[in-house]
Length: 585
Ligand SMILES: [Zn+2]
Image 1 (tube, helix red, strand yellow):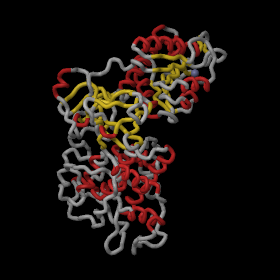
Image 2 (spheres, rainbow, N blue to C red):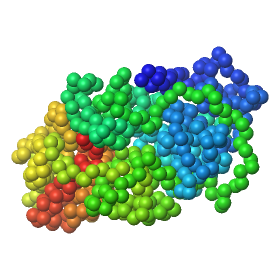
Image 3 (cartoon, protein in one colour):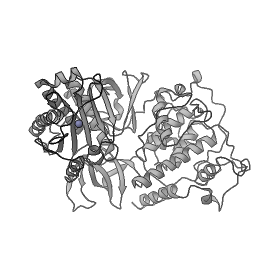
Image 4 (tube, rainbow, N blue to C red):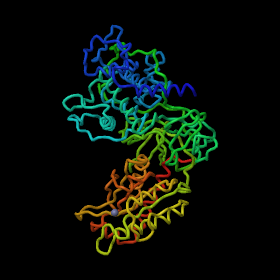
């Protein structure tokens, strides 16, 4: 317990110490090959003083020397003070000088194998590989989900596996163009570049923690049979909010002596520390490591010389799946246990990667082929390796039981919304909302309407009403669209990042998917918008636009009974899907 608190304190020091040279001034070695005012002087002295990277015994830094994959993984392990762990890469034996650091990075999900169990430790790290590893690393310490479209002159040279990472790292200024607006993904990372990138990662983490007020975020695994109570406050006297099953992966937000604070049921809860195993945490920096040795040059170049992250599948974890279970039930849910798990187009490790799932994501398993689970991913079939999926018990039929849901039919009273002929938006959305209310209540949900008749409410009143209900699980605003042209058509759903953003985003995706599979409307996608009702509402929230009243096809559909039933069904199933995906008790 004490050790952990010390570790947290040290981590705080690491992040909060002034990011300038004064930190190291007292005992700093001045590198003979860096001129005063060297462009990355601050970053080099900062990270060498913390022993994230070391100088050479002759007092040089050798900024242009290339860094190997193992050396880079080691830098990241030390920068984040990752917990000790073991790994079993074929080419990183226990006797290897960087075995410990590589293992720490592997256990935290920052590095993964090449599908055949090798890591290629001595290969030089490319800038694309740096981006992938730093992206995985930074996600352990916060929510770095916002990305920027790529605008580099050579953006098409960035391999598919690195694109998302580069987009995010660019947004948080962890990595940027190297020269002439080129990212140069295949260029080898040098000691100075890797130092600057790791420094920038720490800076981004520090800034987010200051803004968001989180000291650190890391993952833990429930270690209590059969389950662990989640309490409202950090006290055994406090009310029990629910339970987490043994083996559930949780994200820890903060801690005190005995309790971890976690997100639970779209709110916060507390679990006793003694029953949680930490997966990636912060520890005192190790002093006995040195990556100053020049990279070994005897490693033969890898076949084809493609310096992009090889197709990766993590090694099997201790969470081997239960074959019997699979045979008994046809329809299963699984929870992702790896920090990042690739979704592939086919059931093999070399198949095209179509996306990535993060730890704790719950998926519906359609079927299992060999080592692979078939799942639905963004509307298409995808495959994930079953070693990193923990099977959950038979899907809960009662996901809506005790859920508190607010439905907000848009407009009303003096504000009819869009009006086309006889049809008023305020009437259309009220009718859909009331049908949906019946469906939800039949499954045990408590439904609160912002309005149940033709009443006027301001946008602020709607959000206020939502925020006045502490136990609110979900807020759904229902609208129909209008445009100045009659060609615009289809259904679109909106979320806002201000509150409960990850939940809102998930909810919005689920709703859009189900609306598309129930309604005869085109897909206009899931979008972020600054609408007041979803911005100001604290609970996970979404706003749906159920077709265009200004489009012939859409409005003809709106004139049928089918439209209302389809819309209510789609929204109902989207809500069920959402609650099935969020970890509850
Ligand atoms: Zn509207």
